Structures are given as C-alpha cells and as structure tokens.
Length: 160
Image (tube, rainbow, N blue to C red; front, side, top):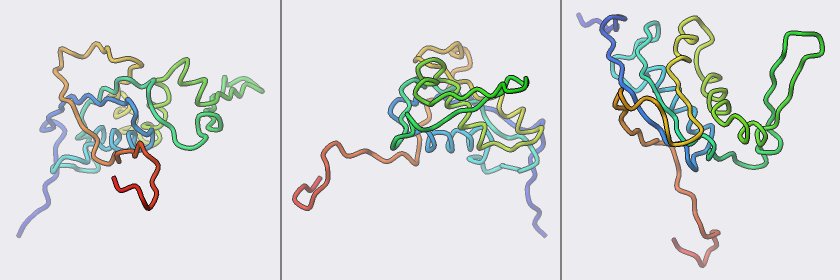
C-alpha cells in the first residue's frame, strides 16, 4: 500500500528567489510570487505545512497595470477612528510607496490564516534594483505566465 507524502516543518528547505517586476503585469506577477511563497512549485507541497520560499521583488516602481487601473484602482485603509477611511489611487501609491502595491496584491492571494500571516513575512519588495539580501544568494526567477507584448499593432497584413 502506498501512502501520500506529508512534509514535516523541520524537513522544509527554504530557498531565496529574486523577481524583477520591471514591465510585468501586477496580477500575473503576484499570482506566481504567491505560489512561490506558499510552496506550490515544490513536489513536497503539503497544504497544512508551510513549505514556501523567500521572494525578493525588485523594481516595483516599474510595475505595469492594464487598462485604466492606474487612474481607477483604489486602495483603502482605515485609521480606526470614526470617519477615518483613507482612499488612494494606484497611480499615487506607486509614486509614493511602490512596494505596497505588490505587497497588497500578493497578500490578497495568500491564505487568511495564522500560517498565511507567517507567509506574508517572506515577501520582500523594494522600489529600486538595490536590496539588502545579497548574503542569502537569491536565485533569479523568471516568471512562466508572462506573455510577450507586441510592439506593432496587429492587422491581417502584419505577420510577426
């Protein structure tokens, strides 16, 4: 009889990955980063054990949003005082705190449990290309789901 492998917390080996967000679409980047943090890319993934890796996201100020989301997408926060709802548009948030946009998108794709709160600590997002995690020797990770954008508009006479 065969049994399903269940990872144990002391057997988990964590790696460090670095992801460049320059020119990447926010949701596509966030879904792959969330899968890395959760550990779904590993064959020993176990839902009730935290098997994920650390992810460093650089160049978060150069993230791409499709459509009119730069002007229309809103981020809400509350000061916990009556009438303390603060609303910020994505364009202003990227200009002031670009790493918060990526953190918000990735956190929304992680579990809303105690284990999910621990997973959130493994995301490190930075506005520029510099980061303080060189000592961990992060491996470059290329996103799989990213489509190449066409530079020339498509028509039936243009074959690229």
